[in-house]
Length: 51
Image (cartoon, rainbow, N blue to C red; front, side):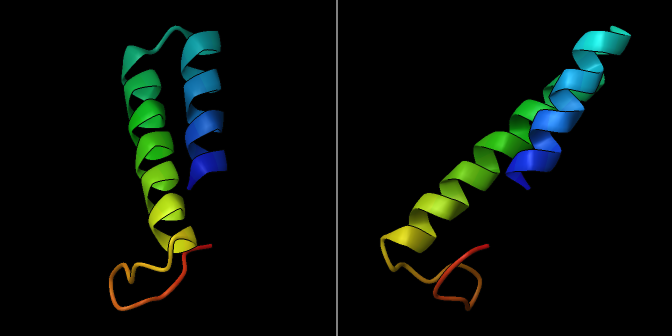
């Protein structure tokens, strides 16, 4: 999710499409939050870790 968000963000910058930039930033933030929660051992959505 983090990598996909970065790719979308970069495509949005290159293509000049603000919607892709916004979606990319949101995916990066959500991915980082889920990764952090998984690292501290908190279950997210019934899982103990997040890939």
